[in-house]
Every structure is written in C-alpha cells, then in structure tokens.
Length: 229
Image (cartoon, rainbow, N blue to C red; front, side, top):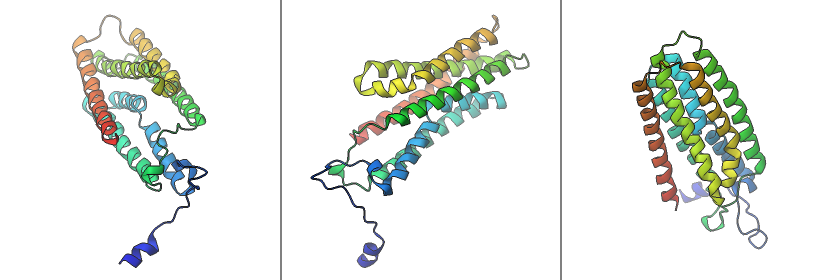
C-alpha cells in the first residue's frame, strides 16, 4: 500500500532554499495552472459581476426570487471553487516555505479591472436603456433598482475602504474603474426609470434583499479570513 502511494506521489522540485526561501504557486509549473484558475473563477464570480447577472435575471424572470438565488450561488459557489483551486495550488509547497503575501502580477490587476469595467459599462447601459422602454412595470423597476443601488453601494464602499488601507490600496485601485461605472449606471437608471412613480415599498425590499445577500457573503469571507489566520 505504501509502495503504491510512493509510485503515484507527484514530486515537485522547489527552488533551493538558500537562493529562494519562500515559494509561490506561480513559481511552479505544476501549481501555476490551478492558481490561475482560482484567480479566474474569483474574477468571474465577484460581487460586481454577480450583481450584474442578478439584475439581468431579475429583468428576464420578472420575479424577486431567482436573482437573489443567482447572486448567492455565484458569490458563494464561486468563493468555494476559487478557494479550493487556490488551496490545491498551495498544497505543492510546504507551509513554512509558502509566500502567501506576494502580490499578484500587476498585469492581472490591470486586465481584470479593464475587462470588468468595459463589460460592466456595456451591459449596464443595455439594461438601463432596455428597461426604460416602457414595457416594464414600475414594480419590477423598483425592486431591481433597490437591488442594484445596494450592490453599487457595496462596490463603491468596498473601493473607498480599500483606498484608505495601505494593504488594500492596490486592489481598490484596480477596482476603481468598475466602481465608477456601477455608480454612474445607478444614477443613470434612476433618472431614466422613474418619474415620480417609483414604488418605495419594493425599492426598500429590493435593497433589503441585496443587503441581506451582501451580509451573508461578507460574513462568509470574514469567517474564511479568520480561519486562515
């Protein structure tokens, strides 16, 4: 049995500790692919992307339930999948030699923020103008706007908080274009969707629904962070 385990065990050549004591998955060909996959999943299931998809689902289904489910599924499952791939990539490196504090390549941040801002801008403009055509009820618009407004507040707030913290400034700067796009689209939606006919009750419940989803996601991330510590 032990011999079989020895036969299938993967051997990874780590850099000489005298030359490079701390190692990152990007340094190892065997771990690099899983780490990139983890980053990609995280980028595609981030809160802004999930909120955008949830807004599209809200328009398509004309129902408050599915967008909340979609938002939670993307953020929660995305976080789980991203964490799984990331931790598998770190498994190639002994704990004492893991370079956990190394920042991601700056090109990754630039690519992620640029693509996200572009896609968000295009998609949000399409949604805003399509829903402003007049064939969507004020009730649906009100609930959708309530969700979108809170999502925008979460994104902008997260960016502002990140800018005030040296440890999170680089991430916040990378997400700044997307935050500006989300905030601008929210203001545009309010001016185009409503002319004094917004349903304040549905605005409130849409906001509460997205806020509750955000709290759940935030609590999960906080628990994950404390667990890692």
